[in-house]
Length: 320
Image (cartoon, rainbow, N blue to C red; front, side):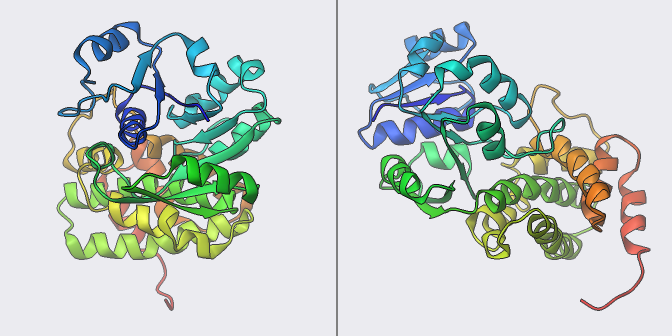
C-alpha cells in the first residue's frame, strides 16, 4: 500500500522518517513550497533538527501526490482538520485516513476520527495517538502508540502497515476514548506547565496529574468511551509524558503562563482550544471538570496562576 503524510511539521516529518527508515516508500506533503524545496535540496527539515530525510521519503507540495496514496496520515492541527477534509473530500473517497492530531474541534465539539467520518463517510477513519515526541520517533527510539479504528479488520491492516521495528502500535476499536485521551492530556499538560512556571512545586504537579486523570475519564465515559482506554497509552501514557517534559508544546505554553512570559504565537498549542471546547462540553453535559475549566480561563487571561490555584484549593473538601 502507498503511504503518505499530510503535514510537514515536526511530527508529520518524524512519522514519515520512521516509516521510510523501515523500508517503506513514503510521500510527505506540505503546503509551503519553500519548505518543500529546502527538504528536497538539503534532505533536512528545519522543524526537526539533526534528522536526515531518507532517500525513499519524497517531499512534495503537489497535493495530487498525496491523493495517490492508499493510507494518508493527517498530521495537521486539529482545528484545521475539518477544513482540509471538506476541501479535498472527493479525492479522499475510500482511502484510509489516520488522524495524527490531538484536540477537540471548537466549532463542532468533535474529535479527529469523528471529523473524518463526518467529512469523508466512505473513508476508513482511524487515529494514531499516544506518548510520543517527534524527536524520539525520528531518531528511531522505541515508541508505543495506540491505533484506534472502529473497524477492527481495517485496524489490523493499518497496524501491520504502520508498525516498524521501533514504532509499536497497539490496536483499539474505542475511537472515542482514544480521541479524548489525546485531547484532554494536552489540557492537563498546560495546567502542569502553569504549576511549575509559577513555582508551585513538584507535589502540586503530582496532584494535578492525579486529579486531572479522573476528569479525563469522567468526560470520556459520558461521551461513550471505555474508561479502560483512558488508562492506556492514549490516555494515562500520554498524560505522564506531556505533563513532565518541556518537549511538550502544551507544557511549555503553560510554563510561559505561569512565569508571566510571552509564548511564540506561531507554535500550535492544541490544548488551548481544546480547553475551551471542553469547558463548553462540561457545561452542556453538566459535568464537574474544575481543572479543565481553570485552564480554559487561563488561556483567555481571565485568571492569573495564583487565582487559578486559589480557585482549585477553595473547592469543598471531599473523599477521594
